[in-house]
Length: 340
Image (cartoon, rainbow, N blue to C red; front, side):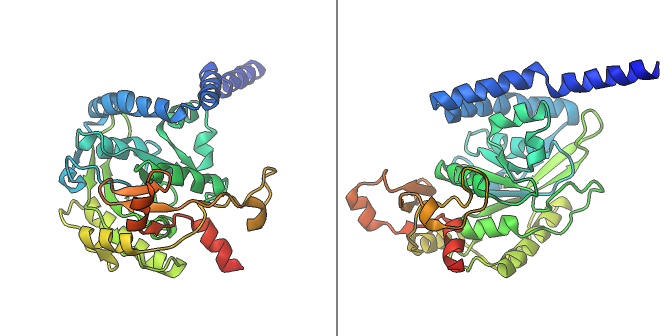
């Protein structure tokens, strides 16, 4: 009986890891990439399935509710944000994304969550999250060229990036120290962030769950992007998430924030030129820090106040280019230049 049970377990494990759903989704994704309409299809899945069914499913399974929707500036297309949240359960992106995307009932906020690479290799889960714009980290949970590339694609479309600054799940329910990654990305890409906090149980039919949404925090675009400063900002982020986690209506202000109008004015004045991005990994996957061998054609970005996002120079005509200041979204390029 022992050999038979082990054989059955092995067969079930192989059937799980090589299930037909993952095989079909992988084939379908490759077909979409070949046709060049992956983004359009993912948008359809996000808004026609996630937007409609997730709030109803989570309300049934966990009586999921949210508050602070007024902080999302109802009825306005506010552009790109960094969403930061505490992290306790693997399903947190679905709860937080539902509150942000469905809270206003006005399809304004598409959130692409940053995830560890293991989630994109887990059977069934990888098929589900692939359609929701998941941004992968590398195997050691660090930012690599693919992470930056997907983040820039998200920002170009005026969408939001979701981040769990704790760097992992904290199962005791408390809020751990934040890593500097989320704060550094806000400094590099010159985008504001929205702190949120998930409370309660995030297990189906095991209890209630609630999401507290904080107000947007606009960091000074002129701040230097350094690890020391990013750590200080991450401390402010943690205090704000803890305040929301405790149910407070008002979050403590950041030491480095501006008002929304001041932020837009400073960002439009901030001027840095550079190429769109430089991939620092060659095709073989080996590190290559040579800008000459990997540089892409130069492209300039401009901040468009009416759209609330960065736009490509190809979109603007010559007259509009003269009246707008370019903004660089190339953190990799700047680091390479600093090393030289």
